[in-house]
Image 1 (spheres, one colour):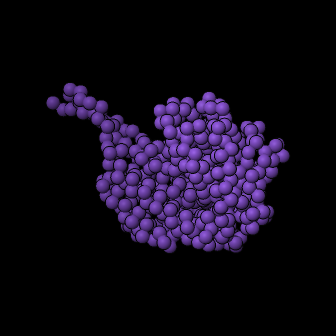
Image 2: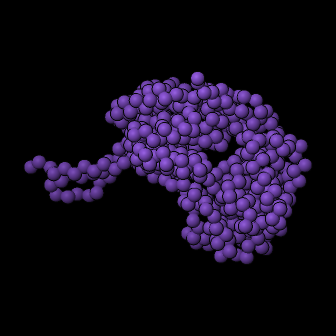
Image 3: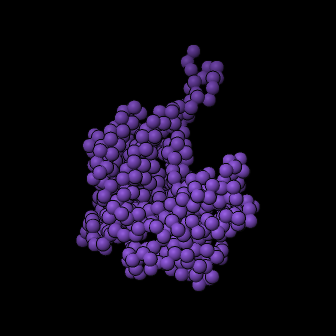
Length: 463
């Protein structure tokens, strides 16, 4: 009997999408097609591959007005913000298309009399992309587009919460005339996703998800020796120095904590503020948090939609309640937000003070709209606390002194450090994490290195 995947919309709790899960025969057929198609795809000139992928980007963006509302229904982002994901998709895809000729160009180690030597970057083969629901296109495009440009075939497994996103990718590639089998998607159970990743025909897995999911990827790929890029969790800190622009720090960090209902691996989850600015900073964040409009993401006035499911909202409430039981104080009255009710996916933004690192709220990932704020004496204390985490995705420093900020950044154990901004991916920069935030890299020209392998050519030239 075919197993059915159901997507329950956080908007109203009803089933929004139903799809049959692929069985063993469908998985086998997809991998056979992918392996066969990849060989021919890799032989096509790079210019031809980029032209076809570029045409698919055009086709996808042309349907943006139709695609964006589906994001709101599937995972709850406010309709006013959903089109931003389409714009971000286009920005990243077009950047990777633009740098591909240089990033994939052969490396010349220099002349050697009587020899011709160079290193080519060649595709890995079949790449499995396992994408999450929180930024369903922005996370997937980071791997799908450069993998295809580089000459790989791609099999995309999207989250059960956002299955339509995989289908929209496929429709765009079909419209562009991508050869059959080069891009495919599968709706899969967790067990069959593991089997897919363990298959010897899969050369690389690009995974975005939880730390537990990352461990499952490592276990699965270990059986087939596939390489893996892992973008996992975050507990991203910010430090507001005494010389910061206070108004800008308040505005930027409040948005960084609560945008997308706090469901971002690189969202701001803990903030350390110079003692001289602490009270004014906290007051400013609480004021802005109170101005959010929590409600249906389909309403134009809504600025804070539901989290992905009721159980996720309850998990955040539990973490907040634990912090309060340990001595923390909530500064936002949840009763001010009529839509915020236990048992639903609607959750008020929350600001907590009198927090410390004994609390899971300041150490474990919080995938929802809650942030803890602590005062610090200065740079040394801030650096110590920012590094006191199992995670290391991004960190943000707010200061008018760029030199001091860079010195601080050099000592932070993260993949990215921001100055006077946060929660943003620049496609020209490598997106990477350390510790439990993952391994590998996407975006930038460096991202192509994760989706190719070096192949050396050492020719003694005939005389």
